[in-house]
Length: 359
Image 1 (cartoon, rainbow, N blue to C red):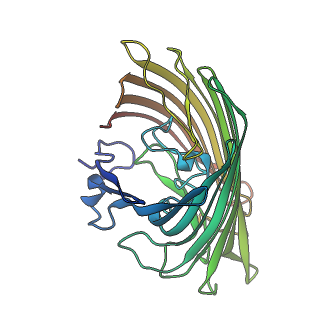
Image 2: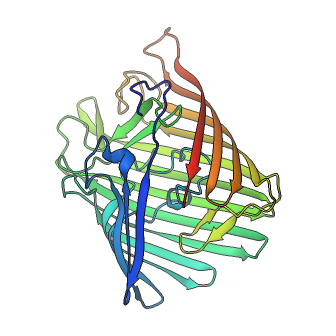
């Protein structure tokens, strides 16, 4: 069931069918989302579709997969702490560009140092084959013990889009899965912009897990080319996004660090009543260039900022089953339309519940 309302509704969030395996030296994975297939026919409903092989100390991968950018972006959807990813992910700063096609290489150079690099098209199966992105990510684990992990990471990417590829733009969705959204800028949106337009992004990440407590945060700054005009001249935009979150397993479990992803996962429940996790996150994204004379967000106002506070409870009654309850307090601020006019805010309070079964 799908709701047409952006304020409330019930939906099949995802229904994945995943096939993984190995043939001689080749590993492969194919994953289709049948919930998406209901509105976007195959092959657009494919998520991951790739083959990989060992090359030196790491793995060479070819096909459709996630570019190597961001701690929360690379965390499995079965193991993210909240129902929605933050603005430093494809929910925000890499809007619509979660799974792309191309070639990548990732490796643990040392036991506590890993890298990933990729060159990909701004293409998802079923969409036009144009545009390109390239970048990479490095992670370092200065503390890597069974009961404590300190993760530090850095990623960089450059997306070059044109009129026939996925646009290089930033759209922050707030207020839950079916929530309303606010554009923070689109590369090449300005009248008279050239055919090829870039988005360049730098991102830093850190996380510390000790016992049943995990602290995590990311900061990303992105430069969009040719988003708007000021005084008849084409201008660029700078957008920043960051979040800080904390989660605690009341029942004593420890978060699991997955070196193959360079990200955290969830543990197996300890007791017969399962595992209980509580969490909170603050998330902000803003276009620095929005003003009454410059309008990259297309609001005609003085400001362009989205803030989200998320409170969550996760219950894992057994391995493979999770119940999630999230409460969002959101504010999209677009400033005013001129001297003496009132500030425009869109404030939402949203309660979302999700049942997850993975087998």
